[in-house]
Length: 449
Figure 1 (spheres, rainbow, N blue to C red):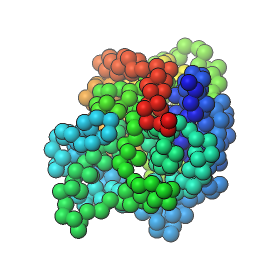
Figure 2: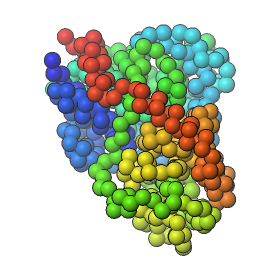
Figure 3: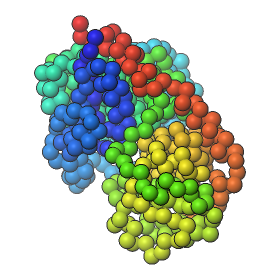
Figure 4: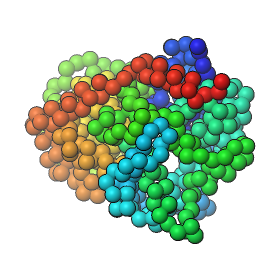
C-alpha cells in the first residue's frame, strides 16, 4: 500500500543531498514523497526531481546565525572544547537494549571522561542554541502541513528536530538519518545516565526543556522517542559507527552531489596519479570550519609542485584569483562531481565534510584529512585504525607536511588496500531500494492506523 512520506531537511545542501537517493527509492516504489525545507533550499530540492514544501522563514539561515551571534543568543563555538567533549561523549554512551533507545550496558565506563558540567555545556551552549537557529522557524509551518497532509512516515536529517515534533503531532512513524558517527545518540544516552546520578537540585535538561515547550504547544508530552526516533538510518560502514541496537538501520551510501556535468578533462586518462583536493564550503561560507587560509593553500601548492601527480583543486573563483601561482601539475576547477572524479584518483585531500568523506569511502580512495568538523577526532582515528589514510591537525598544517603525507599515500600501497577494505564493507550494506521494505514495516508498526 502506498503511504505518504515526508522528508525534513536542514538548509545545508550537503545534508539534503544525503537524503535524495532514499527519497527517490521510496518514490519509485510507489510512495508519495514530499520534502519540507526552508524557502532558500526549494530550488535545490526541485532540481533533484523531488517535490518541495516550503516551511519556515524566508530569512537565510546564515543571516539568522549572524544576527544571533550579534545579539548574544548564539554563543561563539569553541571548536577545541567541542572536539574534546565529543571525543569524551562517545566513551560515556550506554548502548540501547532495543528499539526504544533505553540504556543497557555501557560503552566503556559511563562515568569516565565527560563531566556533568561538560554535558550541560554541550547542550546549553552548543547543541540547543544551534538547533534553535535551524528549527524554531520550522515548527509551526511543519506541524500545520503535517496535520493537513497526514504523512504516515517522517524521515528527518539528524539536525532537523522539528521533524519528529511534527511526526508526534500527527502520530506518524519517524526515522532520523545521521551524517556522522551517532554522536547525538551516544551523548544523549550518557547525559540521561549521568543526570540520574545527580541530586535533584542539579538536574536540568536543556534539550527536553526546549522541545517540551513545542510539544506542549501542539498538545502532547515530550518523550525521548523524539530524539532517538523509531529508527536511525546510518550510511557509514558498521566499522565506523558501531552497533546501537535493533533500531539502527545500515544503508549503503549512494552519491548524489547535485546537478553535474562530466568535464572534458575527465574523459582522458590522467597524465600522472590524480589527487583531488577540496576544502568545501568552509572556504567561503563557514569561517569557523576553515582549515586553510589562501596563503596556506598557496604554500601547499608550491610544496607539492614537484610531485609526479595531477592535482585537481576545487576552489571558488574569488579565492583562485588571490593565488599568486598555479603549478603546472595543478588543475583548479570551481566544482568537481566527486562520484565521477574519485574513481580516477590515487588519493584525496579534504576538509572532512560528511558528503566528501562518504564519497571517498565509497570510491576506496586513500585520504589525507585536514579538518575542524565536530567529529574530526573520530574520522582521524578511523583512518588511522583502518589504514585508509592520514590526517594533519589544521593548526599543524604546513606545505612540507602535506607533501610528506601525500607522498606516503601515493607511494605506500597499504593505504589503497585499507581504503579498499572499507569500500567492500560499504558495498555490503543494503541499497536505498533494499531499505524500502524496512521503512514500510516501520510505517505500518508505528504510524497511524
